[in-house]
Length: 98
Image (cartoon, rainbow, N blue to C red; front, side):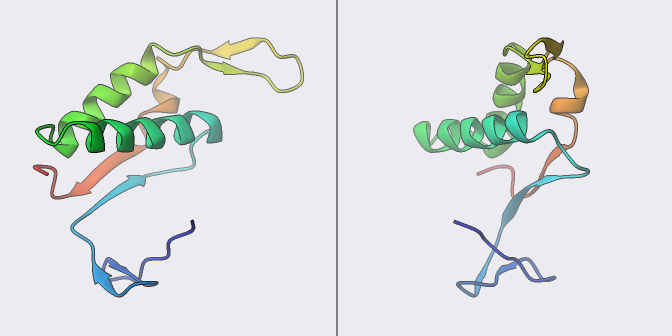
């Protein structure tokens, strides 16, 4: 599902006020960004006691231990996901406490 947000941080499709956003500060590699987002949401929903900031930290650590990026043409490992290019663009903005 695609979501659109207006400049005040409201979910334009539902008109709700958002308290927090997971954002990328610059273009990110698609496969790692998808994995990071899905794992972050999985961790956040699986443990109600886990803060959003803690879930993001754990997710980045998890991603860093992952396989890495393979070149589409050669299918050879180009960079491990421990490289900051895969996780550094991601920032949590808003209510990190929950």
